Image 1 (tube, helix red, strand yellow):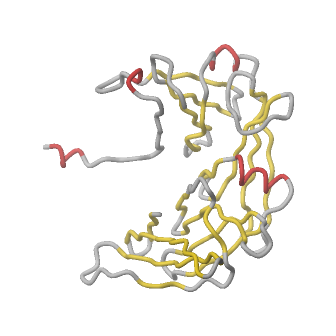
Image 2: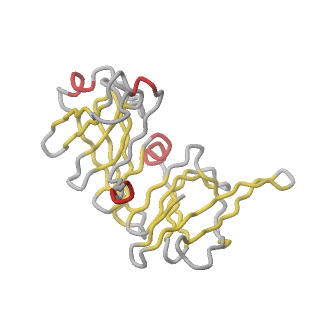
Length: 235
């Protein structure tokens, strides 16, 4: 997993290896700082045994790397907060509806704070995002010390079903203006991005055109928000 320290402007790689000894599982945590003269892996200690979620996802916000995990002792869901600069772990235990959000939802950067977002339809089914989705639920980590979260529910507009059509969607992230961005998970001939604006209660579909965008050759397309390439590298 990759993290970035905005103070020292350094990139870091966190490696978590799951091992087994005499029938018991345990993990080793190692970190590597990129761009230093003597690059070498360093072992880290974590006080609470945990293992990474089966579908590992991570997000780095303001120098803190967040990833989903499970407490090996209590079997409860966790969000691990790893401070890139100090190389220290903090564990957030989540319960109730938050636990389901960790399992089925996506982590996003919401105005510089960690957010968990999840889709739900009128029958209570969660996780799948399609034209039958009726609402988005968003939890935002307001206070990491007190483990305090705020919860918001966004009811999707009536135009949602027609705009989405037959597409299956997945969350990409949240823009700096707090628009929720989604993309086609299994593309149908063309590739689209979808922008839901909670403030204006609107949803817009944008077709992406360009080189190698014949998505009929792919079974799965992943989209990344705020990715910037240095065009000088192509000169």
